[in-house]
Image 1 (cartoon, rainbow, N blue to C red):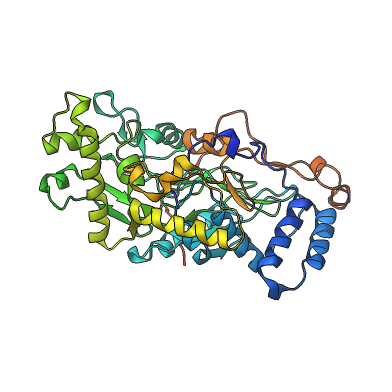
Image 2: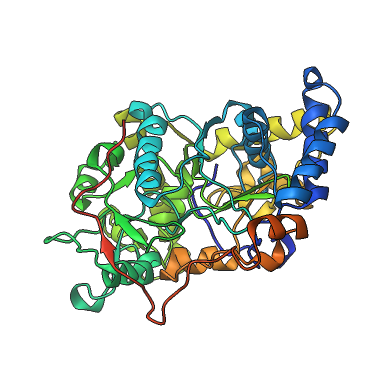
Length: 437
């Protein structure tokens, strides 16, 4: 499962306008028919579809059973066009926390998710699903792109960014909200979680140290590499994507697989607009960096990836190399074809960012038509995750069915107001951290 989120091209994205919380009855029917088709023991789909349509007509939405929720989350992973690690989609552990609404409870359970998924290095694919959007009752929002991300300080020494340049805007927004960076800043300061919940201002929560499993990076052949004091976290828990199952949106549903080595070594640490470490590694290797034709970038990239895979293995933390994962993905495609299902894939993401032509996934084309259920990254979520812009919340009685509006009373479905100031009341809770049972 990929650990990076970027703005989706229009050809692969859904409409960027947030759902008003009203479930789509046709999507509901489509999903429930899929569920019953793949679960023959559940009986015929028609009675369940009729019930869901009646519930939507009355209340504006409907509730998934625990079995439907688990199936929908797993199929959303199965349908994820940008994920190469889908072979084990059926093994996804689904935590049904739809009863959790408050910011503090969401933050507590996010920390617990990281502990459970980290599993002392034996990474478990996992998703935690919080309350959905419903008419007049938006679900909570997690602002962070992933549960664990590193700060980027634009006011670093010599005018350079200290930390991750991707998150300079988000880091500045969190400081404006009241977050205090460590007295001694480092390139790997873990950012706090920011959670919005209806009726509450955005709140900040530091992740407890025992929830953040990190791996110090070493090279098996070059002792000097340890002096770079690099590290990366173990659980790539994506938290800014919306899970949509059968016409119902779950805006807070953090999920993770395990890392692909190139995500860290060829992207996070190597990209020019991220940590940009290839020149540093090249100098350590004594490479000629005066001309591109020396292929110093390529050689440094390989050694950086060797260090990542070696370090995770030495620490007993699960990770996969791009050759192994490419073979697994092709096996997944074969299984889906035998099952009579399409397998959407974005070639530009499935092909690894290093030695692409040496992998089997490079030498073929894929179906690009998106399928539902799905994970959605819309423009609002990207802006929030990168710049700290408060996420819009769906709401308004006018969007609910007439019966539901009548039962609630005209004008009672409300959306929490956003004051004129960029951030309403600042409630930094980083001193308390999060606790979970």
